[in-house]
Length: 187
Image (cartoon, rainbow, N blue to C red):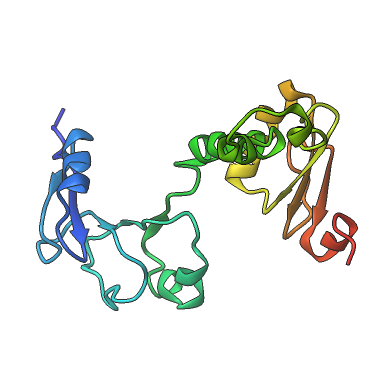
């Protein structure tokens, strides 16, 4: 049985030590883009992406979760032989936890508590709420929204998901397409 060589991965547009360490930790070898790499990890946005890639490149990793700019500029279509991947989902859980933290801080009037110079119960009367029994609308229920929905359940909150397509989002009580968002917040 012949041993396969480790994948040769270029990083662009500039070398990046952090990405280089990740490539090596994953069993790859970092190589310059002009030495026939198997893959390219692109660390910048689409501006400046090369019009031509070495024929050896079979895979490109882009830095963001959103691919719209890459599609709109025709970059993906210009390289049909290449498999494209993005950062979608990489930070969904941690961003959802952060969103939950901010939601709880708002519901529990944390900013007002931090600004207070003395404790007077009447100052916070009517300002402190709870998620229990509430409905939380998640606008743009992509990866972060899908991660946030199950986090809301133990608090007794119901989630409404809003996305472009209106396709059901698991765990949401209802999914509404963005063109019907006025049903959530009447004008």
